[in-house]
Image (cartoon, rainbow, N blue to C red; front, side, top):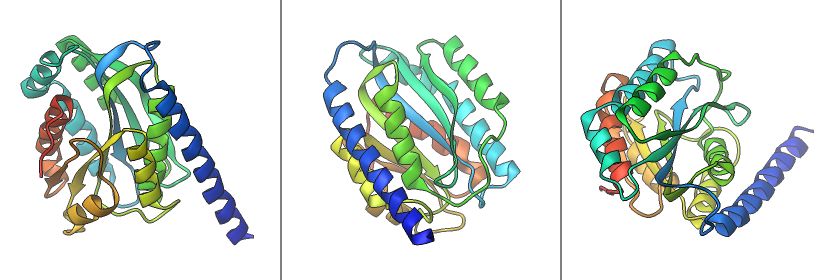
Length: 238
């Protein structure tokens, strides 16, 4: 019975992936949605390996990065001058929660309001395993159904571990890449020193993709600031 449920889960993921791919390809050049420079799905890892303090450090890191001068300048320098961001808490394949819906960031006030909302958001996901694949599919769904069309679409994977739950992560990555979505990585390497290589081989990809390293959650804020600036400017790094 467990094997049957697993097969049905994989089949469901495959069907969803195919539908998302068709939808993204069909709407990628449409003009019905307002344009932004980047539509960015930002994830907060809430798996078993992330304790309460590490969860708070992730939230603070994203919030501080959004209001930093470097990120605000990157937004203002864009051809349109605004981005759209959504925040997802994620853990296992059964727990992907969009905690902040698509939000336009164009001015410093916009960034401040989003940062405050992130800081105020409680942990909503169930503790669980690490399903990067489920997060990627969730992010694809958000990009496909969101109210804004980005000149670039990015899913931001920040994690301290590898995919150990749910469907195959390579299939999820390849589905996103086929739809023209870039996947960037922030690898927190305090527990898995070779995580950058895993991200490079199985997670990240697409135009201008890159990976930023953080030695620990204490260095997460600086890594996220550098990451957001590069994502918004569309600057890939090695």
